[in-house]
Image (cartoon, rainbow, N blue to C red; front, side):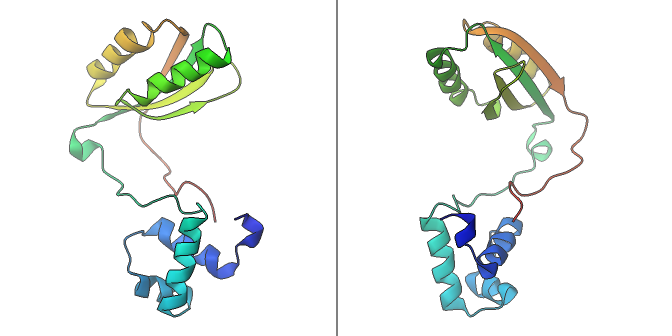
Length: 155
């Protein structure tokens, strides 16, 4: 499903669900101005088309003991497809890495990391990242505070 195939009601549904994915179908239907059965059909169509990938809870990291958020810019020694795939695969297994992006520019990967504290993050950087055979450079950025948090895409 391409964006051009989404009508105004579909866009309203996506906005509402991105804001609150726990609401009932009846509540969603009221908010977008249609009755419940067609609303449910539209949501299912959006799910089947992959526009809606899933539903999850947004957790408060500090309340769970994860007080540190940091970003790592990782440069590899070589940018061969095999090395890029290998590093990407390794990143999947690192719990401290919550998001990993292959990027262009001076670095090859951008990692968003969440840790209990600075010592845990430092251990990861020293013992895992910089010790990795593919890694050439690691630049880290500790966050001070989050100043904006929206849904993943604007609809």
